[in-house]
Image: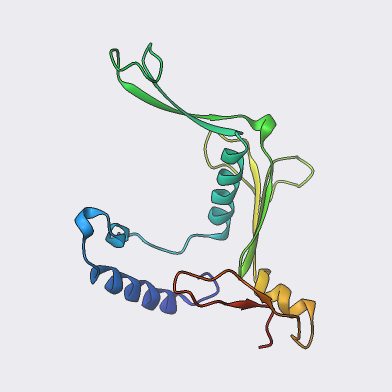
Length: 171
């Protein structure tokens, strides 16, 4: 959504809200829970950070623990439950995430990258190099890859409506 003007984004979000409002409730489990007044397009830096969290949680560099005060997880006889986020910087790896319209690069600070793009999201995390490159996504790569946009077609998996899309088609 970032390449789209703010006015067009507003139109898209209004249409989405109207669509979701028209769905049945299904006992509180419908997509209507997405109806929040603060829905907005996230920045590329935020998008990269979410990808970074996902990859590093998968790699166990970021772990979530739940325990009771003075008890193990299964013991419900004492204390209140606590949740703790643990970050293991020595295990963290950077990511390059390529979307349709942008590419995000996020990596723990290696000091060789300079300080202009270093961000701190929380005192729990090391400083991160985080950069988003708008218009460097898959759509632009396809155009750069073949000046005539005549790349071979590759079948992509079918989506929920059972219609298939193709990548690398002529425009």
